[in-house]
Image 1 (cartoon, rainbow, N blue to C red):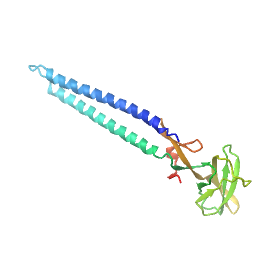
Image 2 (cartoon, rainbow, N blue to C red; image 1 turned 90 degrees about the vertical axis):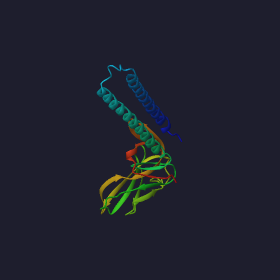
Image 3 (cartoon, one colour; image 1 turned 45 degrees about the vertical axis):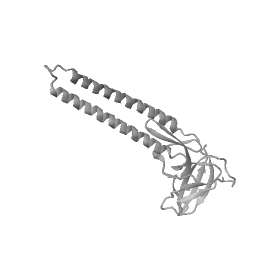
Image 4 (spheres, one colour; image 1 turned 180 degrees about the vertical axis):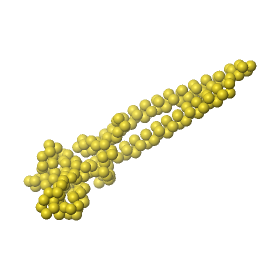
Amino acid sequence: MEIGTQTSGAGTKSNNQTETKKENSQFTLFLKLMTAQAKNQDPLNPSDPTDFASQLATFTQVEQQIKANTLLEKMVNNAKLSTASLIGKNARIEEKGYFDGTSIRLTVNPDKGATSATLIVKNADGKEVAKEKIELPSKTIDWSGKGTDGKVLDAGVYSFSVESFKDGKSIGENYAEAYSEITEVTFADKKTLLTLAGDQTVLLDKIKGLRENS
């Protein structure tokens, strides 16, 4: 299992550390210049105290900025480490799920007014490959992976939807939600992208739920 966060996280951490070192260096130089100015001033013509006050205020601002940047860096790195810990867990997302030969747990949401409902399964090409009745008022079902001919389908990514009926008439169709294992976490352009089993990719904020990999 590959962990994409290690490369991208390390690169970001290295960049942040470089920026922090640069700011610390500038801060140290600023402090040395102030000290040298105080030591080398003409005792018969000392610097205006207001100048020192202004420089001290600048000194304080620089110090606070460095502390703020350091704290922000720690927060970002901690957040990334926390997100990386999702690898190996199962994420629930709308519409698609990876079938590996074992049954898939689906979350279904038939219309509230439905008197019957049907699960519709399509392959990666958008072709309907399975259809089965949902016992109401079920909220979760296990799809066995069998096609319309009763044979187990090939491993792969499938899409799932639920069509609701009232007195035999279709009243709407909505996506079902399926669990897939998280295999990689990538950070790019201020976004967190998860790679799921079957090379599915989804943004972190699209995850509907999480559970341990059983």
